Image (cartoon, rainbow, N blue to C red; front, side, top):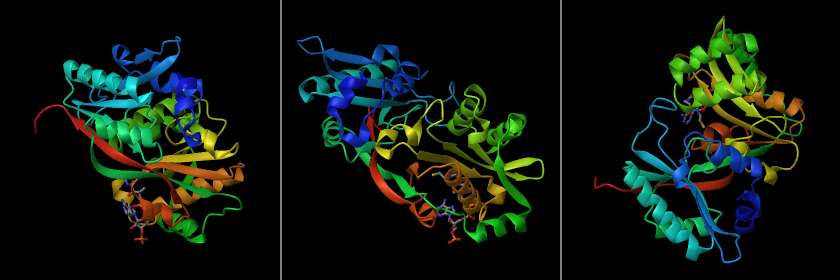
Length: 307
Ligand SMILES: CC(C)(COP(=O)(O)OP(=O)(O)OC[C@H]1O[C@@H](n2cnc3c(N)ncnc32)[C@H](O)[C@@H]1OP(=O)(O)O)[C@@H](O)C(=O)NCCC(=O)NCCS
């Protein structure tokens, strides 16, 4: 499937087989019955698509349990269009009230990628309605040093940014359970515990309590995901940052800035030449740190039931 995808997609969106395994075969939300493949007349793959049920309520709390997802789709239009229509009908029969393009657990895309015209055409011709846009951002990190006001914001508030350790994973999890109990908590727990990479999560600490977090990835990460899915486009010394979040009671005091700057500084010191932040609308927050948009996605949904 990865080989077929790479034949159809532009260079910045190439995938490894491990990415397809992570996002489709191994993803708990992927519905076996809706992973569809059409063979061409030589026995190759003419088109394939993967749909996922809503993660709400069983994978993690929050979200809309009737919103299912078209995770990824590619192929020759004559084979792909009926395949996707068939998948959408199967979602409706399974109880979906709508199908979102991307934005799924273990996603490839947060929406319809502007730079894959074939997917824009597919979304338009299968009834997806655009409701917004989100971006992936990038900045070079060569020589990056956190600005001095990052350190003073931390000093004034009595907080510190440090890497999470195996011993502080429970405190991180308690923070996430109260502030970001949905997908961010689930993904963070998988990284810090199942993948054994607590140190890739930066925590903002006030005394013994965690009051902010930022997840990072590098080429050493065992399970590249989210911003790191299309890492082939970033060269060999890439980094990814996100999600990032600060407890509500601590926002608006420069601590989000300080957390971001500290994590970027550590990534640069560790040898990263550039960093991607994916799936965001906060262009100003990241723009102040030198990030610029590199990819845009249309947030799009196909409604299956009348409003
Ligand atoms: C985004 C977030 C981490 C910022 O943390 P914070 O501690 O409030 O941010 P800071 O106090 O350091 O603010 C830094 C600057 O970014 C701006 N900013 C912060 N949050 C913003 C938001 N949601 N939208 C637009 N601008 C924002 C601030 O206004 C400030 O600019 P200013 O100094 O010109 O006023 C925090 O609001 C948060 O956890 N939000 C919920 C989770 C989230 O959206 N994460 C980002 C996902 S991509």
